[in-house]
Length: 155
Image (cartoon, rainbow, N blue to C red):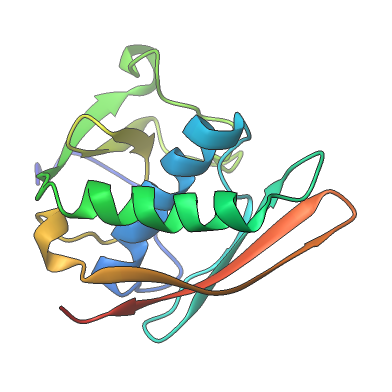
């Protein structure tokens, strides 16, 4: 990393496979349901959860499709790369709505192959082959919010 680049301090250290999987899950939810990325996520090594705003509860078949699609993307062995850009050079497909008000002028853009692109200061694997198998352990839907609880199973 260039020593002249100043990014915001990160308040936690994620487990890179799970955090990278969160990127894939977010993009899968966008593609399947047209919703936004999760704004309420708890990402940990053993188990994690993400909430998504949906107008109706998904069917069991849709839950299975989420799991299947995430695992299909993981199986592609996509490279996970980063680039540093100033705010005025952010690619059009990057949503900045989750950035804090005090975000730095320089942003790190993380790409999971050609599947997902977002601004992120977290830690990631170098390739999706390092993630393992994504498993939804449970889910619930209440008042327009789908909560997915998930884990990674070693291959």
